[in-house]
Image (cartoon, rainbow, N blue to C red):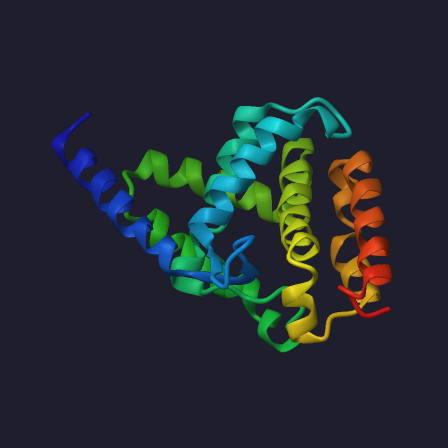
Length: 196
């Protein structure tokens, strides 16, 4: 590898440290602190390793890991958009596409192209691996809300129907995880964590 490639790669790695400063609406369990995107990506990677047996079809776990580690780093430039914010989600795809071009352009050309292809695969959700990765990405905030007694849901007045609609795509990657998610959603309503 040339010194120019190494310099670009180090520059990229330094730039993505900013992911630690992009905060989400979910809380780190047992704390009053919001989770950041880097923590979210790390947790998704562990979820992929632990829960891969529940994918609807056999998945290439290493490919799923690449997707969950790369999918949110565009938020360094595009920002995190709350999934239930209808207005905020307008134009999100274009903001993130521009952010992906800017961020991945810091890398050598071959890696830039490879990473953009992986990022786009996740966004499209058309492959077995991307559907499973997206399932995990939706399940994680649901777990955070359930185990924090619906804290973020309650703060934003989120309803059962909104959560069901947002998370129904979990079934595309894992029927088993969707069944589990529905049980958590129903239990959340019964416990008062989530508006009926």
